[in-house]
Image (cartoon, rainbow, N blue to C red; front, side, top):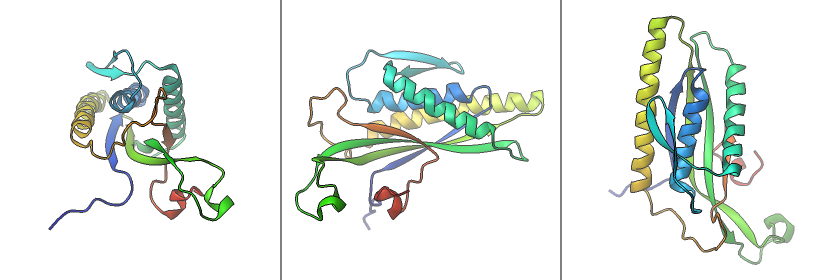
Length: 200
């Protein structure tokens, strides 16, 4: 029996585990790793060191600002949330879009007939971030080991996905510097009809 893919863009879930002092560096590194493989303008390769791992870094001021802003928002949200067990969770989603010509006809203002193009999402990366706050030095050693292991697995998962799942990437049909717009959302609602028509 043939397995069907759910409707909509493919979604790739990445688990991120960190302690409060490292969450910024780890989440930034994972986001840069995603963008290194999905950011199509020409760029000069750069790297960053996180937990003794060398990971790719996209040196683009506009992208760096967006990543730093979203990571900062995530950290503020996570630090304002408390948990009796010491673990706090949040999400970031990276969405990539293609620009498509709108089909003519329709209901005028309701279908956005005034716009010649629409942005259609072709891929989503969801980062599920868990913050652990160790209470003892022994717990801290376990958390550091788990952070390094999770970071390595996550980086390898990204590389595996981008090398295997390519058929959904739309063709580049424009000469713009960045042919595929992107968004980074904090705690996104990725499912449901309300999200698909833009009211949530």
